[in-house]
Length: 133
Image 1 (spheres, rainbow, N blue to C red):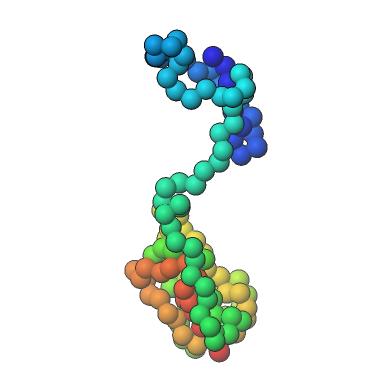
Image 2: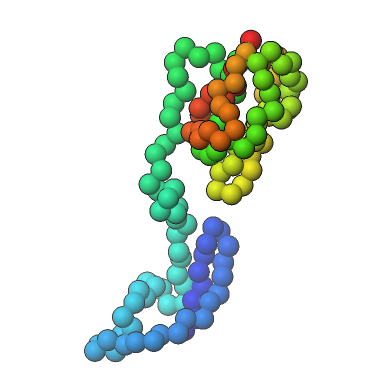
């Protein structure tokens, strides 16, 4: 049986082989409502569905003077220290999440006031990593 399946807006034609029939002569699985076409909705992985939404930033923190973690992961490298002068897009930290490295760069020019995470630390989404003067 040929089916046309839509995934993320792309259409795919697939061949489906019916392996078992029940007593009524119909296949025992799902049959699309319209012969020859079925749409499979996009879905989130079980891990993503179980994940909690990102925590809201803390009240009273000047967002222009902090850099937050874009992902939950582990700090691999810290490239800045308190007192260091930085420029926009300077590499401050490298995070690892799901075996991928994420570069955390300076959003603004300024002087580093404090670094809230060190190599090996686990961080959460929206956690403050670096504070600027």
